[in-house]
Length: 177
Image 1 (cartoon, rainbow, N blue to C red):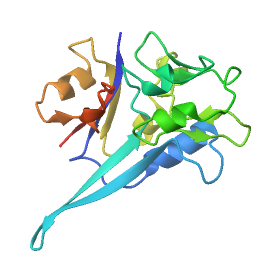
Image 2 (image 1 turned 120 degrees about the horizontal axis):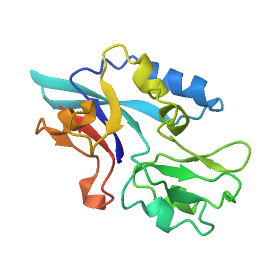
Image 3 (image 1 turned 120 degrees about the vertical axis):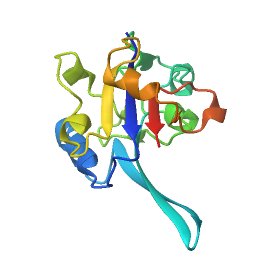
């Protein structure tokens, strides 16, 4: 199994329900976020387009945060997600410095935090908090190795891209335009 998230930019309306659901589900401290919505304007007047994209930890297959963590607190879980063992994290910030996506932050309790892809929910057969609340079904999470899964279908559409491919991290979060 390789859990992935595919976000369809053509469906995202920028409502930030995913951000609020994540903060609520994971009790994220005030002023900190595990996910966020990015707005990008492309083109020049009068041919201007706006793209909206929900971003978070990319759960990379070649995660620099994992290889640069001196305590092993950041680790790859067998399902393709990157997790943090809070008890092993010293808050040294090596993982923050090595993440090309700016997806990590220091929790007020001193450990580094980030999106967990709601594995606590997925392990119980529930959708992620952000997927469950998305009013347009822009967010899909599932097993990329299952050709019948919604994420596998979205990945086959051909317009799938990842953020910063030049970083060589092989993200498990992709986007469809």
